[in-house]
Length: 192
Image (cartoon, rainbow, N blue to C red):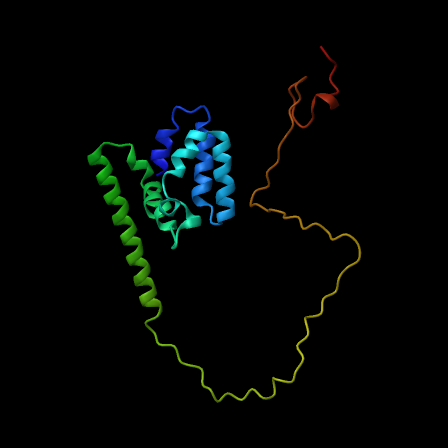
């Protein structure tokens, strides 16, 4: 329905606005909102309104549909698969097929490794906790939070000091005389 409407309004000056309004009216779940947006379409383009009016809304609008239509409006599985094979889609057919095959085989291998990991993790049986544990002395005790002492004032910043095996020292080199351990501002040589 959406593609047919898009083809119908292609020559209209307000085609983008009409398409946006059509998608809104199709997905509107409340009849009052549906009628309001339908009126907006009538104001934007009366011919588009007449075209929509000729098709019963039970076939294309959520507001008049008796059951869930969401499985028909989107194809999430196909969209996520297309996003997953995005790099392969632009290639020639044989290369694309080979890349998709490799992606699928890699995915199946990862899943089988995960299943094997869980199988090994749960091979050893767990001993059930017995029901007859004596917990009577715990029930009437009050549990308090741990004691903390808060220091006054602003907290000190925790600085990380990295100590390396060899200390890294950087020597300054004067641009005036070329000597090390001082710079141009503290140079005692006369300016030439």
